Image (cartoon, rainbow, N blue to C red; front, side, top):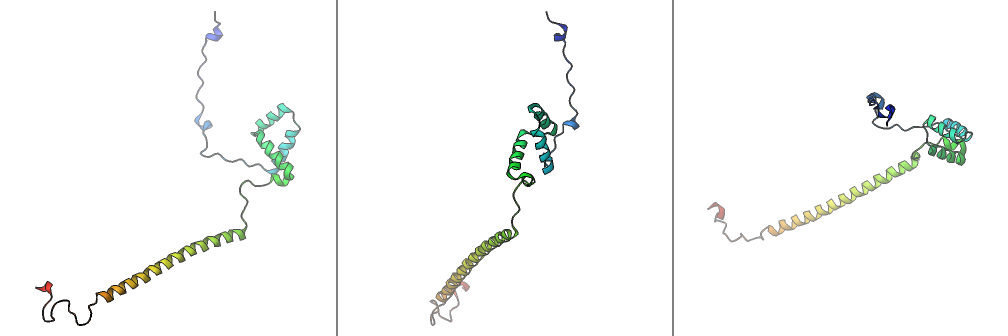
Length: 155
């Protein structure tokens, strides 16, 4: 026999408010200050196992944060905790050197192109000169007609 408590159906849960479940278009990266990291590490180290989990849940952290922060603390204490994530800024001299090298490469390509154009123009000029001198009739010849005779295309 079944008890009345097991046979009664529970009412379906109401759908959550859409404004409360809205997900931002892009997650925002969390950045922690060096003081915050040091405070959390000190507090974490003084707690027992259960309280450590509660601390992580309360602060919204993962155990990997603690591991990473400990390694940084051991490496360089507070100075390591303040390092900014990402690529280190480039040295202005190196940046200028890289820009000049790119410009130099671009100019070498332009020079090679200009030299090829000049070479082709020289060859074209020589070819046109050769055609002009070979197509000119030698002196005294009239290409098979007399001077008094009109050209063939006018007849």
